[in-house]
Image 1 (cartoon, rainbow, N blue to C red):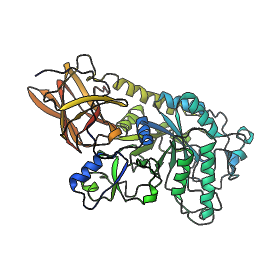
Image 2 (image 1 turned 180 degrees about the vertical axis):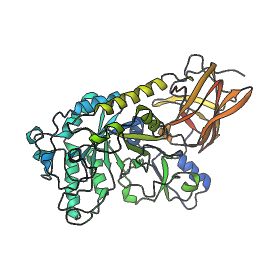
Image 3 (image 1 turned 120 degrees about the vertical axis):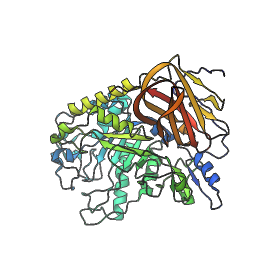
Length: 500
């Protein structure tokens, strides 16, 4: 047996031959066999915008507005704009702190359910232009978008469809009103990378509920900001289902949906899809074989996992002692980013318009923990070797990355010799999701007393899977891909020692 010494950077691998067209949506036919369905599922992949979004890993929410000054979580639309009056507001401080924490994108609540707008909109008087902040000349959207651009952080916007202030809410005229607001936000502040809608829908001041014309909203975004992902109540990104920051142990980005109308899909890659995938996306099992085999169609629809650094989403002074610790944020990171999701962490500014020092300390402490843990990949040392025992694993490169795969088989075994006995307790593994998500079951083993002992196991991997386990010591490590939809494509394997 000849050892093959390979530098273990962020993975190495080869793309298997792809016989089906790569796209993020595919319809299933009644005559499709189980094998046909699995083959189709294996070739569903993200659009370019979805892939760029997934690579961010950690994004930030800025919940800020009239609620910051009333102490409420949900206002009622009757608040006086004069209440909004931060004395020290500094959007650049928000961005600098977020960037130090490793946050790659910030989303601002331009309008929450109370209808108060943080930009000087022409659509309503219920906005910052009628507040004392900067004598009515303030524009939080501009301040934050400018600061993000200056410091290389991506920018996103939350615009609440529910508006408890606007009189025409509950009528078709409101959809015109909302599109005007959306158009202002998408044309006046440079590039927007994410547009975030929730599904809140209550009564307006006229006692009516609104039928949202989401398809029109989506088309407006696609026309003005084609690179922006449309999240949660949108066609690009779904809500994970809780606000705890914790994702599923088995998280599929390829999920069942209803077949789309023919006019709802533009282009072969569905890059311009303007229909939200249908189905209950909060079940514990979204994309297993049993689920996809009874679907009309399959779509790439990845999960965003949201949580606030405090109990509330807006700032409340009495929660200053309830800021999540760096260790708690790390556990959330392991269970969001580390479970095939993107973490959306809310950081609410104070009444002064600043990120509180306790939030800042927690964020920086969290980033320091991540840096310490992932600084030393035991599989990336000069003495680490991948022992390709049966030569079933092949390695190739392409312009967008390197990865491992197999030829003609849906399992793989990676055996590593890390040079000497070392302690470890954390596995970090990624698939090359540019071409889809395939792995259904894997396990990690260590050689002890001439026998392989299982130390960790999991189901899905996707963009990233992080598994913690009891600290163990060893020199020879084996990762086994036990089940996969066609040949697996593994981009990265990391082994670390997290000292708590």
